[in-house]
Length: 146
Image (cartoon, rainbow, N blue to C red; front, side, top):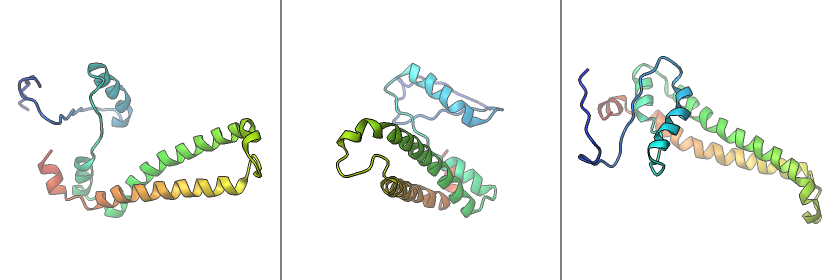
């Protein structure tokens, strides 16, 4: 496969793409690659756009409901980890804050349940929009512009 290399200073672009070929799980390389890019330039923003990946999945026969489930699961997993860490921290900090809680029990179960449910509902709503858009990816367009 022919390749050409040029300096970004000679041909500036608004965005760049880094492509890696690997025999290991690609998700295991995210952190090391981010560290290497950060070592090169700390001001370089890193974000992942998965249109191409989802386009390939759909082109290979993935059903829209499977794509929707995949995106929702990944988003909600992060949200639930955050909620779990937040609950653990709040349980630990209630003893310190006990003197500031007027008229409320330090471990008020109703408050914890309502706040947790609200946070999970907001996270689900925030995940649904990109998940719905992911099911509408046209594989031909996603593969053409990559």
